[in-house]
Image 1 (spheres, rainbow, N blue to C red):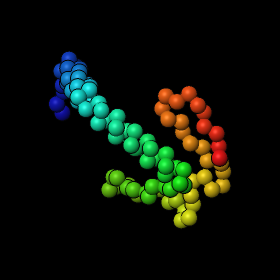
Image 2: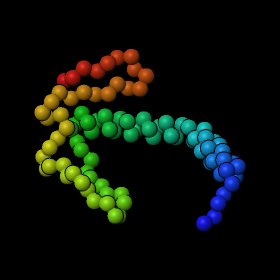
Image 3: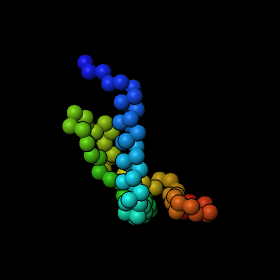
Image 4: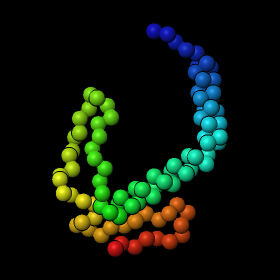
Length: 94
């Protein structure tokens, strides 16, 4: 087993953090545009009662709880929309 000194490990973590922060700062507009787009898409899917299909991302795993066919979000209870980040209003159920 290879042991890495704590100082070297700390330095590697420091470099990784600075690299991540630098990349995020460089691509800030693209990152925020992508997040806003994902938020709008998810909000619309929630309003429409659409569920994403189950997906197994690790080959050794399986889907544990299948969503029954025909079940839609919000059909048996009031639906609530999330406010836009930074919004001062609180959404009400429909």
